[in-house]
Length: 296
Length: 185
Image (cartoon, rainbow over all chains, first blue to last red; front, top):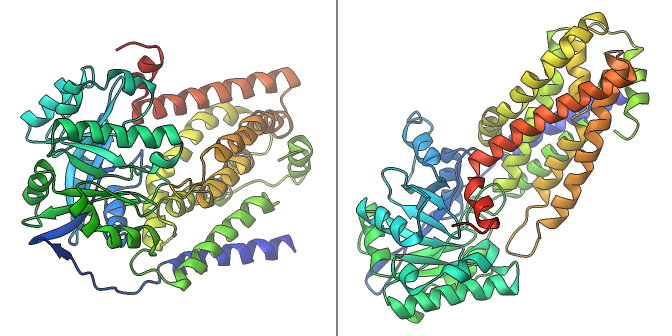
């Protein structure tokens, strides 16, 4: 009896995984507004081992209708190096712009550094780290600006030194205080620098879907340089996981519908067969674990 | 899981001498559970390509567990059930962590409101059960005396936790966070 149950569970796992791969093609249209092409990006994506393998992250980004991502490991460029040195058969961008980065995890602040060429020492206050990023031609984005430690330190000098502020982030809605912190940090930075970019990022590790919070970029050209130029010029709008957009009102308004759709629509190519398959694989594995060790 | 001594005693009475397949099947199940769980948690699906990639990349977790366990169990295993069967039975004790991984895969915290704390609370279950299971393994499968089994289980848990905490510490840049908690800049 148990033996038959194990065989059935194993069949469920194999068939479930096979079914999960059933997908359908979906054409992708890029939006234009005010004479710019609108790209969707996530500038805070962790790579293995603090996330999934970078080529899987890129594939997932495409499925989540993103055009650009930055691979940002903690105080390291592991994710980017894995991507850069992966065999070309694995590392297929397929239309997604992949940027090098790191999440500078320091005392009192975190900063997503995008476009970096070598890691930046974390033993320094934010203005020094942002200057080091700028010296490399990279962007300094204040990451998930919340909490008592950051509130104490977030001076005008700190806010002036960043190119963008993560105003949309999956952690934003965890607590009312957190939500207020994110919005306050962005508003204060905007008052000091009208070109500071509103950034939405998923801070993807294993759970929050890539692009759950995202940035809409109004670019002149869909290239890495075009992305950097749009952020430096502040032509962005951030979008959170509940479909709310932030940033300059005309830009946030232009992407409001797209932002709501990003929060509610299923991923591109999603099928019922894939959902059933995933559930089947999960249930089969749970059964195999619960049935316990074979006696032979 | 809840009565590990009775379960292991029952299984050992079978007197099965394991093959190479016996040695790899349960570690392999653990690796696949991790691979599928990470795939589902990260993307909501378990496609063949994603499962293969995550299973291979996360196999280091099980390899580390093997590297820690084999030196501790090999001598006793040769006297009793054989190394292959001992590895098989040892990884049967992974069930609480495997179930936690599967639970985490479906309880994905999100901006839509699923909090992290239920997972954190659930993690207490395997943390509490595993030392009992490992003790029972040393006692019933390897035939150690009560005191020796407890010592072996403590060594195993201490080494395992040290290795995985160090790994987590490095990967997630914990040092600055600790300095922040200590109020240093």
